[in-house]
Image (tube, rainbow, N blue to C red; front, side, top):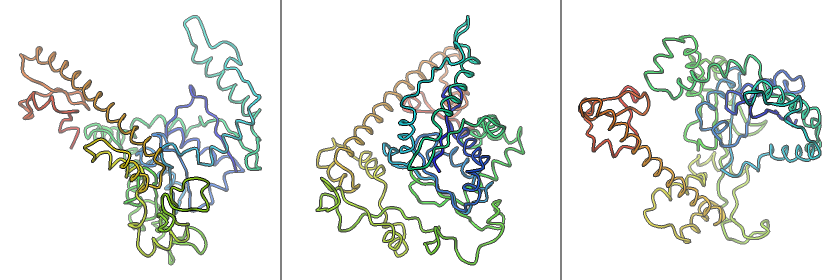
Length: 411
């Protein structure tokens, strides 16, 4: 059933808190609720950005919370490689919507001007965007996608959404904050801290380890007696859960395995032009993983290219790119694109580190003047200043640091 959530950029933030509220909102839709409510296994495809990517801690918390609340046996979140999100079915839906709204024009001033005497009036802007969103939904909802009408809904702004956003800063402190700030959070919000801890314990106990976390995040029952998840409290079932009737157990993760005969650059009756190689079909992949484990699976192309780039001390040649393409079943142009991307990242980081060092040096010089000339350094996390001799750090050593974090923030 194709469903779309319509959200105006200025009204709805693009973050995991909002996405989680939107997803839970679907439970209130009579046509959708049975689909989400009565499934033991949830398979979610996302892109790799910070608001959706399976390796981001906030995203993992939100899906762990869903996994716990909805009593799921398995929750799996997967992402395609960078630049490959267009292959997801959601892009097919977006293409159908493009056809559906091709002759629709909705002004952002549908209820009047967004300006007042002082400039942009945020309340007017929000009202206009809300009205425009409703007009869009009324005009385009029902457009066909693969023969089925698309159901369009307005973004969630209920109590769940408000709660998610109100607690978000505290959640980020819990997940990534300094030790000092985490202790303050625990002291000031003990009940919420305990709840976050319970959800995160489920995440830690249920998460399948040793998977390429940029692409896949899987939660499976641990069946430990002290686990907070209802499935675990019920005890281990007599037969292991399977992906589908008669299929392999949920612990069998079908990561891709290169086909030993259909290699890169070989003869192929399927490819129109150059063959970049193929992977085994799902049945053979599952059988091989059962026999040999995940060690026979392909390493993600991103990791292969990144590792080679990081370990390369010389200029990368055309021959290197060709070998990388063979090892990853990518085209040479795809590999070249990745190499250039990594070069740009490395250059930006160097520039950022140089700028940060210059800024820190100016701050230190000013602070030293105010402190009888003694060298001091500021923690990049908590902004507390320290005398160099108090922490056994010289000014020369400090100049070599990209960032400085005090012991309060690192222990």
